Amino acid sequence: MSVAVLKIRTLPDPVLRQKAKKVTKIDGSVQKLIDDMIDAMHTNAGVGLAAPQVGVSLRVAVIEMPGEELITLINPEIVKRQGEKVVQEACLSVPGYQGEINRAVTVKVKAQDRQGKEFRLKGEGLLAQALEHEIDHLNGIVYVDHIEGPDKLWKLSEQL
Ligand code: NI
Image (cartoon, rainbow, N blue to C red; front, side, top):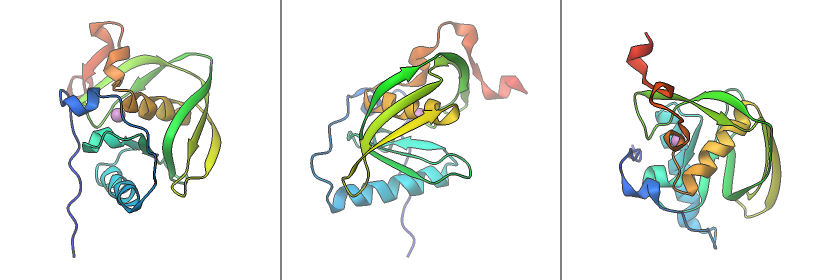
């Protein structure tokens, strides 16, 4: 049986602008949401996805850096940010664009895994960027909000 992959919401969908609700009970519907988000992330070749991007305003995100183990984050919070650097960023919810913004060099995050167990994670480089990006989504923030000028956002086709 084939299962429909969830559609990715794109700007200006209002769900991307809502502050997502905390998950209070990790039940079957949350487990299904996580599985569906993983499918959608893989189908769209993303390195991360937050629940609002599939139309669900809950504090759930998944990240899978190339060659690394998949990370499921429930109710994630950034507890520490260090450093700042200029990075290039894109988002499945802003198709066809790429931009340049500032992100932390390292972040420390606390979250629950899909069994509800609390864990802490330190991310550096691309993982730090992905953690900030996905947690931003849970707060209704999209990377384009961090763009500092019109010359810092471009259409991907213009780059070629
Ligand atoms: Ni995104």
